[in-house]
Length: 401
Image (cartoon, rainbow, N blue to C red; front, side):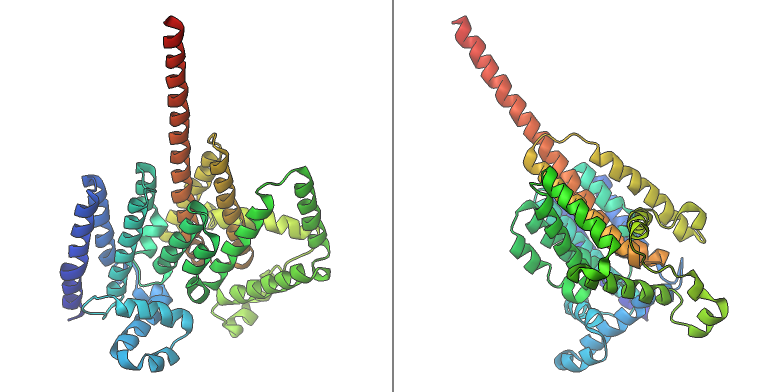
């Protein structure tokens, strides 16, 4: 019976929305085909390639959405049964006019609709280009998480809109306001956006003196983190999160942890040169984990290969020559966001699956907006060249006369 409900959802909502969006955007046949493949993936993952319980949050998210929809007029009661970070996304899922929410595929179809909404947002705000579109459609981690019953596609939506206002429109307060649902959905992502903004504003017009002060602050903070008020709080919080996520990897099975002496594997945050080494090490490791020799299953193999490609793309894209100073400033913001997000997540996340899940929204945003900024710079160069050629021809005409 659940399968029939999914077919009704697919035919009357997802398929219709897909056709409307494809027609509205006048998408090329190849892109339409690739979007259609996204729909197929929804039914090829859960309970086909793996059990739906493999991603445990799916079942909890589904239960929360079903509870809220079934108790629609007593939502407060439904909320009490679930945490805020599970309940509020599920409130959005429950409000989507999908006829039935009876399976993880139901929520996955809603995530596909959100995936489509983000693409429409990209197209209508003229961020789109072939590089942007194909990266967005083909990025494996985005394909995976937008095809599951998880809140990560919602997180990407609010990050994409908020960072558009911050990065492209330069309306920082409005951007923070529009991305504020992250405070409930993924609080650490919101903090990382704020931290990236602070780092950007400091480096925006930095000269040698500012870089020197920053380098000195980092060194002093690394050697005596407990002596500096803000640094000491951050240091303690990172070490707490780090230990909690380390135990979370073993599902807080204290008996197993004790028997296997897992505690001995935990590396606490150090100080001084050790801390500086850890920061660099875990920034790079977050981008690359799982490494190819750490792979245990086909999913991790795909993730490892994806990471190597993404790492190469980060190096390649930052080697592109950018002429316009304003665009260079925006690229600086993107790199601040990448450094902050990969460093903080790298220091606290141990599980390979969690690492990929935590970083993929930042990677999507990084490349979508970076490709857009490169396109803007190319258009700027053409305009400058066109203006110069026009004035040059005008000068020749005057001299001839």
